[in-house]
Length: 421
Image (cartoon, rainbow, N blue to C red; front, side, top):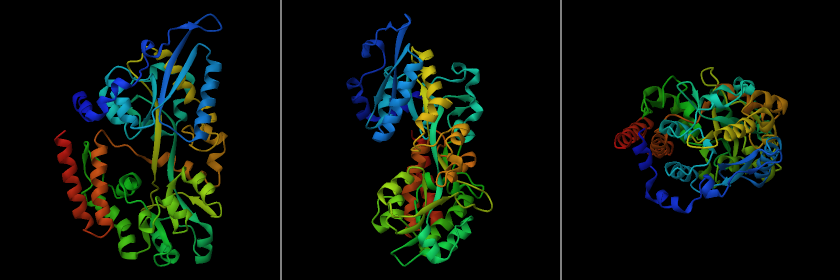
């Protein structure tokens, strides 16, 4: 993607807010160097990210305090961008006012890497950083042509959540294959009151299914989901709702998302991420549930993974300090503190093992999926590709048109939009 095209995607509204934003330059922040305790000059760098829960905010605050204690010559200014995070980041980068270090979702990584605004990290990290300790798919999401532009700070995969009481009453076992899931759903469904399986008919949740028969959703940065192999892979997912009538999406039962659908007892199974565990435990404490790895398709394991990295602004004038921060935050010590409460899973295998998440009753299945997960990222045009997929896939899911026709239209529309950028 050209820099011109990337700038154009921001839209006028995002450009208008640039003047109201503060940047990370010394002039803007008033961060003129000052003496540290040992007489060396203290450097202030800016770390930008989006908002989080109060509990997560406290964890990050603690990690930053620990970093500053061990690095007295570096002060970190933490900036929370509450709304339109990526638009704000892109606007500031264009204007030369970007933060030194910032969050980057894997979904957005290919487009930002393409523009050249991110600093390659290999030369800035020490030899003992142990890059091999990261779960490989997560690290690869922030690489291009063998160059690493971000280190993942954490992640979640998807796992099968199941209601233990419903399974016991129906006398069925937790499915390990997708065919078993479909059959078990029949025994668990009770008309329109309880569905065996709560579904998410969107690309972010089904891409690993779509590619399970050997097809590819994206080829050469173009939509490819009209491919017969992709249609074949997705058809059983749709048929479970339309033919078996043992599956439904959350809004069909008055729930906001599948976690709520599951907690309300309107679905015996859902496929959700780590974020659903504290939500269900806190919101629906009476629900007894377990998790398992996502059932296999044709004998092959599959799931999705969602991850965010710390990246460095290539225009930063404080690269050494920024590198120290990224190294600490994604190193074993900083990551252990950050993930200690289980809100996010450690992207380092050693930290997951040290904290016991790989053996955890509920999180173990999520950790087990990391090595084979399909990360939610797929080239620079994924935003266009997914929007058109979701619009048409839902129409097929609701029985308004055949799946192959819906995906053919979605592909044609998406690729026209890509060509016209």
